[in-house]
Length: 559
Image (cartoon, rainbow, N blue to C red):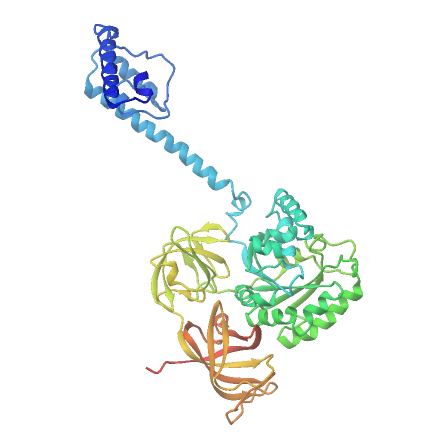
């Protein structure tokens, strides 16, 4: 063999080497093989040998494997002396089938284990899942008020994030000299958000109480990301306005350019009926759980919330808390004897149920979409119910799609009722053909689409006058589209509701008018009277919310 292992000096040499090897092999075969040896009889009582793989040629002498090995052994014992090809192949065939069946059982076990291990917290609650009411809670408020930290603390207190993960976050945050940020990392998952300590996209998480299943929507507080916040608020049933009690921080958030005002107004426009105001950072040295500071924040906020349209007695509930220490979120805080109401999580649990009609038409505005073994869309089911394998229509493109699988808060289900946050895997449509703002409907009852509509608008904040021809950005349900005010129809008196006889030439701040609007592209919308969730909108321009309004009438396109 050395002749082949070493490199030859010339090609002739290599040929000689091969010839030598052939001679050696022939010699070995002629002398050392015993042709007259006895036939091989397998030892039946030998220990069972199960190979990890079996070469094709070795089937004749293969030992049977699998649960029915004993039965096979008896057969081979009886047939041992006359070994015929047919029988040997049959026996081998049997063992292959059994061998095939055995790993498949093991694989099934493996698959089951793999499915169960990542979500131990969700599995026990699956049987009761349909009974619990789904409530979507959006956390809104000025940047750095503590929205993500409160969200992370709630997830920890309800057992959705384990202690080890939080300790890991705490270590990582400490390395960056940001140790108070570790709780918010449970919701701010991408690197950019963690580095800057600012939420950019709406974070999602969920937790359960005795009676309800809550989805947390952690909205960004920074004014550059208000469009994302509107998308989050449009899915919410209940808003939590987080304000910081720390000296100076509350004032900044509440002043003209602050997000406390804008977010409260946008939440109301997005259709949030109930507002909980969490006065956060009560443990701060400048506050120290002081009742005076709490009352001061409350006094400033109430008139504003009243102006936006919330009823302070029925729709708004104030409570002090500390997101970082978790005081008054699940258990009452001992530093705060003057607050006699329920802590935050029990208060959420005690809220009355929302009435939702599951027999209405299917309406699911799409918030986001991505590719993952098919096309996956995210959104909140506003009305109707969806089940697996159902045929639906994607508006406004009128694509017929089929629901392949349904995930409600990352738990697979066969059907979903209104109010649930869903992930749907669809068949029959490509991810590129979907845009946020499209709507899934049932074929019998499609939603309205169009470009021109009449709406009642309240001008909230605009320095100069607004005339026909004015362009802005329209946010309606999850859809964002450019829009132009084509005509002003009449002014509406705020107190009496009377409409002016003449057409106004312009409108200015704090006036209410009815105008005709035309969008750049076709969008899905409904009148406010028929379907409030798809009939409310906001107009924004230059990073500010200019007006809020509701759709009164859809105008048919002139061909």
